[in-house]
Structure formats: C-alpha cells, structure tokens
Image 1 (cartoon, rainbow, N blue to C red):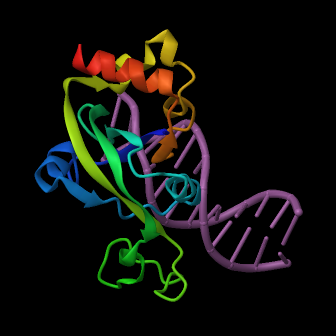
Image 2 (image 1 turned 180 degrees about the vertical axis):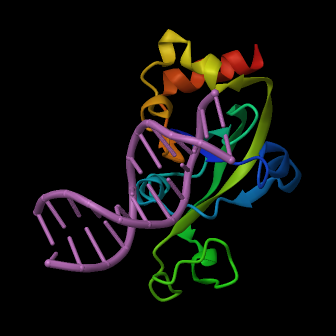
Length: 150
DNA sequence: GCCAACGTTGGC
DNA sequence: GCCAACGTTGGC
C-alpha cells in the first residue's frame, strides 16, 4: 500500500466538504506530474488531506483512495473552471481518482510546524511546494498521523 | 496582495 | 531543442 499527500484549497473543497460527501472525485488536477502520481494509486491507499492557500496551510485530515484513476470529465466541459480545450472524451488528457473521508485530525498540523520536525525534512512537501499530488513515505505518514491524533 | 518558484507555451 | 515570456501555485 502506498501513501500520498493531496492538496486542496479549503475555501473550495476542504476536509469538511469531503466529510459531508464521504466520497468525492479529485478533479481539477492540471499538472502532469501530479496526474501521473494519481495513475499509480490503488484502492485503499492512504492520503494526507492538505489544506493549501489556507490560514494556516497544513495537514487537516486523512482519506483513502476509493476508486482508481479515470478521465476527469471537467477537462472537456467548457463551463468548468478546469476546462482544457486539448482534452476530449475521445482523448482525455487529465485524470482523477475518488477519495473517501477517513478522519479529521484532532490536531491540525500547520506547514510551519511540520517544517520544524527533523524526521520530516525529506518530505517532497518542502522541496516541491507546488506539487499538488505527491507520494509520502510510510514513516513520514505514520509520524504525521501520530502527531495529528496525539 | 505580493512575489518567488516553477511549469507550460511558443517563436526561432 | 533552447529559452524567454507568461501563467499559476501557494506561502506569507
């Protein structure tokens, strides 16, 4: 089983939104590297739900992959903010997965605090700040869950 | 709101 | 294939 971190802006879709919906498609990813990581996801993979562009930003909750990758239909919907003229139903360019709500962390973990933890220093989160879907090592995942629930 | 980092586009 | 211009992300 793999572990991931996925970013979303809570103003549009946060951990509370996912809690209400229970399962939701992770649409709107328009970055090839992030898309390619979603293609590696399996049902049951664990996900850290990260709030970006937030006050403060940080890890807010846990989710898991509920459905493996399939075409992101918002990419060929002209009315969608995620529309991409290069993507069609016949030749989709962008993909999404479904994620299922697992829990909201008892302790929200702000980015600034995570950055100060030596054991987490190698996380991609700090080196590739703009990557919205990224793999997380199990030891990092485990520590974050422990801190978040401790 | 600012701006640094960085991914993408397009001219050559 | 290079790289400048441009657009977006995301922290602060």
